[in-house]
Length: 227
Ligand code: ADP
Ligand code: MG
Image: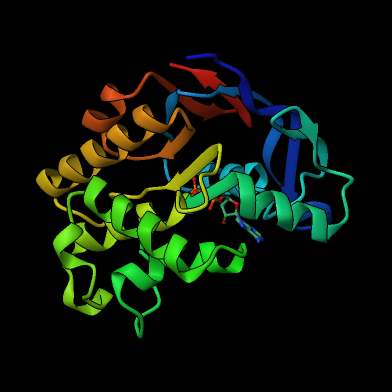
């Protein structure tokens, strides 16, 4: 499979607060993520994992530095363009699934596709395939409240990739699951990434899962370093 750079951060700075209470979270962070690659982001709470994922996912602007998605620098684009890139190129998974409680698993996965203009039929077909792929094809008609934590996270992952993004960003996606379930959910995520060739950056505190990823990075002194 041809590898290309999906995410490139160059000299990213992110500070919170003002004056004497300035909190410098990212201080010249550089990072490159290629297609087909799964990278673990392992760092203690409060070091800036979520901040980094939000900047990479175009949810926050860096205070300085550059964020490039598939070779396009996104920092000076108008908000509607950033939103369009986020919708088509980036999938997000959070620690808590954030599925819509009133809709079935299948409908939750159809939603982003309908927003992108796919027909009901097309969206349903792809949503069903993704559910099968995540090994929960039999749970499509159930609402999130009727699913286990592991099943909910698998639906959330399927929804994140429903529009075939090139980048998957996950913020402690198994942080709320027991180790065995976490391992099972990660298996499904990994299979999906390997099959689709997307690039994934996954924040986790789980060293066993981190050990199964292609690379491990941490945040030290506001920079991203391999470890
Ligand atoms: P992590 O995900 O690694 O736990 P975060 O990126 O959430 O870390 O936060 C890093 C630091 O930045 C924390 O000290 C947090 O309190 C602070 N922080 C995060 N977001 C904001 C914000 N919007 N305003 C002020 N401080 C923030
Ligand atoms: Mg966090």
